[in-house]
Length: 112
Length: 113
Image (cartoon, rainbow over all chains, first blue to last red; front, side, top):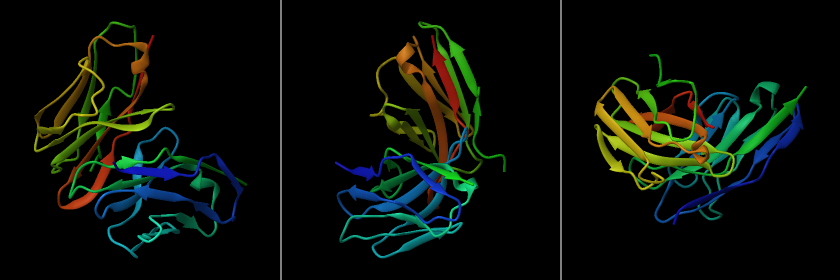
């Protein structure tokens, strides 16, 4: 079956540091890949997505590249802010529409 | 647009009571999803609807859980009878077949004592 594996948190770093959250997946077919972010007390929001190999999704300074050869979709940001403190979820979908398979989530804490 | 609306935001009830969670999806969206989030199990898809019809309810944990979508602007998730292990945050999300994205509501935090 499909699965998503993320690095465990919490990840604690200082403002302006470089952030990487690893995500690897197992899937049949050619999945679409997503990163969602959940701020405290809120629902999930789509951060970025990629639908085919070598696509790069980007938003709000975050980037992730769909790597089919390594079945990975690592999230990166060059300079984090305190406001980036949140839980980040990697997810995949193999349906044309429908189910999202989420990873366990990675909590990120950015300190001033 | 107001986004996905869920009510109540918080619910505290006693074991054995019936609980009804409500969701209003974004107007024009044709998909609706119910999720449950716990520390132990993470984010789980319970059921989803397309054009008000349940498509996949394989994530519904047991017969105590039921979901309905009587029209395009309203859905309910009911737990009867509730148990302490049902305590979780329940999210509703909606989406459109026009683009592959789900929009989540703020969630309902359910506590069953």
